[in-house]
Image (cartoon, rainbow, N blue to C red):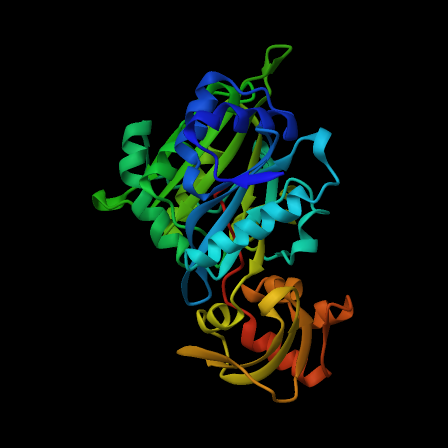
Length: 399
């Protein structure tokens, strides 16, 4: 088996692997978007007698961590043809992608998992979660009856106005990733195969006094039964800098006529909406995993975030390669340091569990209950106070 970055003349083979692995029949316009999406110099291809049989890639990201941001490699397009499974190809490609991230100065590797049983073996842990919410429009009532100050805009204006709003908000939430201009163009490409029978993207902008403070992107799937409207509105993104923007954007969504059901995907697990409704029981919520995170450089990752309380803790981390060892972490709201030590450990955990706790989305007490961390009760409590964060983990951007 030979491994090397995928060349432009090998792109068709790359698409062929993805079509088999993800049961995807790509349309020409989707292939063109994929060409913009992928960074060929950060890909790895597995070749059997000159034929590509496995693919993987890193994307260059900056990810919000508590109190700051760090570079992260976004693993994507990873898979092996069914004819070549159980040959160690995925293991080799993952090792090469980790090396690629290290060479690019990325202490974190992140991904969205197509299957949750695959990536724990490589040290990834679920670091963010997100919620899906649903409510019948007849029950979607907020207090007050002021008309929403939302302006309907087109895609070109959305590409101009949305990025500044998103960038302000993404810095609040651990797990959010920065969008480049190219990423915005991809995310709003709005290809026909992506619509699942719904309308094109609709865009609303909240901008009191001409200053953008929030936006919403959504689609409507039209449906009629016996002369009655049964349409479904799906919110893809609702991003708000201020409370007024948040309230008015939801009021705008809830006020759209001919809608029976409103669904919102990829929402933060905690948000004010459920407390703003006149009948909150009618809002249903399901929670699922979001970003999976693998720490590649423990010292840089732990020193690169801030902590809710001032404290010090010695962590004994197990895992493959050079991540294993003991680390003295000293940190607080103003910054942190982390270095290797020979001191007696306060907490023991593997690299997967550390990735789960890193952004503040999982507590050490619960991880200890699952036999994923070990420490006395007082140390676990202190670590939870230290690592916890005032905003929930969240990532609304797929890759």
